Image 1: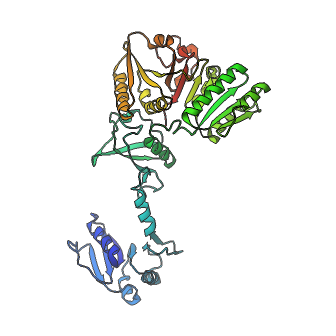
Image 2 (image 1 turned 120 degrees about the vertical axis):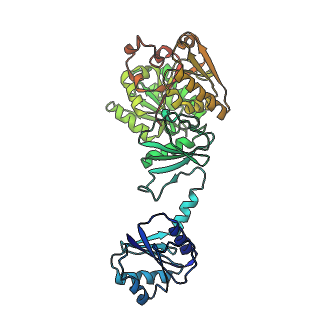
Amino acid sequence: MKKILIIGDGETAGHFINRVMDTYTSENVYYVVQTKSEKNKNINLPRFKFYEFDPTSLYRLSNLLKMEFAQAIIAMDNQADVEHTIKNIRSIKKQLRIIVLNKWNLTNEDANVVLINTNEILSSRLIDYLPNVPVIAQNVGLGEGEIMEVLVPFGSSFVYKHIGVIEQKDWRIVAIYRNRKLIMPNRRRMIQPNDLLLLIGEPAVLKSVYKAIKRELGQFPEPFGSNIYLYLDMNLLNLKTVEKLVKRSIFVHKKFGHTLIIKIVNPSDIDVIWKIKEYRDESVIIDINYDTDNQKASFFNDIKFYHVGLVIVSNEIFNDYVMRTTLYEAQIPVLKLTKKELSSVKDASIILGNNRDLEKISSIIFDIAEQMNLNIELYNYLNEHQEAKEQVIEHYYNLATIFSKSIKIIKESENPIKKLKKKDNFIQILPFTKKLTNRKVFSLLTTDSELLYHKLEDNHQIFIPVQI
């Protein structure tokens, strides 16, 4: 059983002593020194010994310090009294660990003297009550942000998502608090507005997760990045195609309102380059790469340097197997533009599959549709298994209510791809999963609508990674 010495006076010390008496541990015995004793109720006498004297008196304190204490805690209202008390303890106990409530920005080079700054504690606690600021556990674990508490707002992208479809890499949802009750999470549990989530994970990852939870419509391409990146390979494109790509990228850039970086690789036509430079302004950056080596490494460096959240490529570039694999590895949304006009697009078309990937990217789809002023239509192929699809449809209906945006569910008895091939003025949105990096030859006999994305390659398509 450990002996703990508590030396205190004033209101703060009184509150602390009362809290100690309410603790349920039976492993400690507390020796409490007060300059003026206070009446305490429900004292556990075997665990608490009270003394009334001035701790700045070395003679009186030395008698008590004849015992072996595991730790001393000082909470006093006078700076000089604190300093003299520390000096008295040190004259007798050279290595005793001393915890000091520091109200005056005291400094002490003794490694066994821990100064608890009251201003830092109070400001940290007040910050916890600010909206849109994560609450981080400071006295649990490492206290570096690996435990975080997040309130889910009504318009969050996480609302009405099943926990099982949320990619949790290097982080986990370990508890849900709803209506002041603890709910243990499982894959089928659905997150609701005003849920309080307890998260554990890498501090840097949790910061990104926090932003994703708090993100509402109008933020895309966040949380992937801030800016838009048009990738032009002059070996694959002619002047006419390049000019159309740039114009359509400018259109996207104006819709989302972020900086556009036009990256030119393999520059071979000076006339094309001069034509592109005509579009340069404060929000459009032209970056020309004359080095033909290590283009993949250069691409990844650009993604990081420019904080890219959306990559725009042509059909020719996306069809290249190596480039498509590189785009997937970047884990950034990709907008593939075709020869069709982008300004005439009215619908965001999604083909429901037998997995839940579309639920994972649902909030991003709503965000894109909102900013580009598109209608959302879901195509449900009735000849396929419906259980997973019905859950995704339910989720989209819930989000439509939250974001006040209508959606259209189109039930099809024939493959929706055949119907969409006859349709104009739409953009297809798909999850960007690893299977899309397969060569087209492997999709010849498949019925997977995602693997058959190339059947609609004459239309604009957006590929969204399923991870945050």
